[in-house]
Image 1 (tube, rainbow, N blue to C red):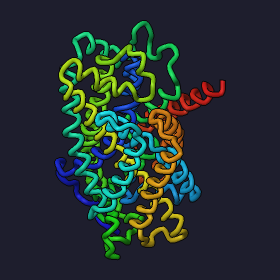
Image 2 (cartoon, helix red, strand yellow):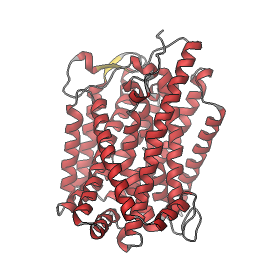
Image 3 (cartoon, helix red, strand yellow):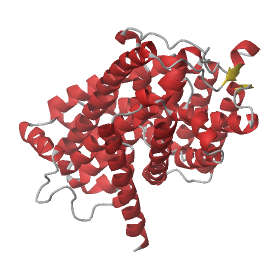
Image 4 (cartoon, one colour):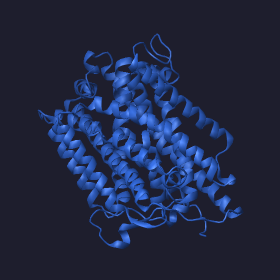
Amino acid sequence: MKEFPKAIKFTKLLGPSFIILALGLGSGEIILWPYLSSNYGLGIAWGAVLGITFQYFINMEIERYALIKGESVFVGLHRRWPASIWWFIISTFLGFGLPGIIAASAQVFSFIFNITDFKWTAIIFLLLIGSILSIGKTVYTMMEHITKTIIFLGIPFILALTFIIARGLDWAVLGQGIIGIGDGWIFFPDGINWAIFLGAFAYAGAGGNLNLTQSIYIREKGYGMGIHAQKIAGLFRDTREHQTVKLTGEEFNVDEISVRRFQEWWRKISLEHLLIFWFLGGLAMCLLMLLAYASVFGNPTNTEGIRFVINEGLAIGGRLAPWLGSLFLFVVSLMLFQTQLGIMDSTSRIMAENLALKILGGRPSGKINLSRIYFYFVWAQIVFGIVLFALNIYEPQVLIVLGAVINAFAMVVHVAMVNWMNHKVLPRHFQAKLWRKLIIVLIFLFLLFFSGLTIWDKII
């Protein structure tokens, strides 16, 4: 039995929420929601706010398990449903192996520098991502530093541009859109593409199985019982002490002290996730939607892939200065690149941990070289992406939307599984309150309904 640790200072808690926030910047925030607002208007903004609010509650229940158990949710899910490992490996690879985000980054970057065929740029970017993930002392620390830097530089720049470009009327339209009022319609405009809406809703935050990596990051950061866990070392750190990792957590005595300490942890990480993930994420989405609406709404070429992003850069350059338009596109390309970097890290962690659980079989408390398995999946995804590009399958929006729809279905599954597990496994004093459980049920039903609606729309 280990001791449930005391909560650390709030300022030292900042970290995991930055990574999970950054995972959504390049999919929902930069691509799908601005695409919808540039083509349909800001009346759709309510979906972005509701989507990231839903993901806040989803993520907190994932964090709850990791705080108490000191292990990822995949370990607990494997105990209850051993076959779940194959679902998480397959659905993660299919949902995020499609390299739409890095293709979008490469397309925007290539436009700036007048590069004719952006698929070669995308291939170089994939190889660069593999190199970055391979050289760090520990992967998590490196990812946290990169993520914080890009968020603190990118979001203020976009905020400044939005305040310059948007007029007072545009802000009023955004305010109406947040409560679902569009230009002559409520909540949904006529002719909306349900697949894109579902994908955008799923990507209002991280989306898909990426939400589940929050439990891995909680463990690696050493929050709660994760203080006893080990980190994934870089590829070239070959010391056995650093490479061999125990996946299962430690037990503690359930008493008044442990309950009180957990409640302190819970208050602090709830506030951290609310400020970093929900507030900054929601702010970024609203600003990017507003900027797209104020600069290019009504442009007939907006529906052509991610052309609306390039149209934004041209519009900003035309209204302010050409170099500002180019700088905007460069920042967008950089944020998309960083998102693909974070996704590659997170998905590789998910698949590596599940495959490790399969290899360990009946002895999940044993130790395994998780770092090596992790890098197998990193480079497998890179090779898969390069093969698709070589076969001329590299239209960014098509890849992003297809992956987003797959990930929406994956969310339906993991929301049900994780919260049922928490209800059955966690001690009563550590479980979610009834109102939180009811919100999770509502989220599950909402995602299930729109997933079914999307299938019906495509069949009919």
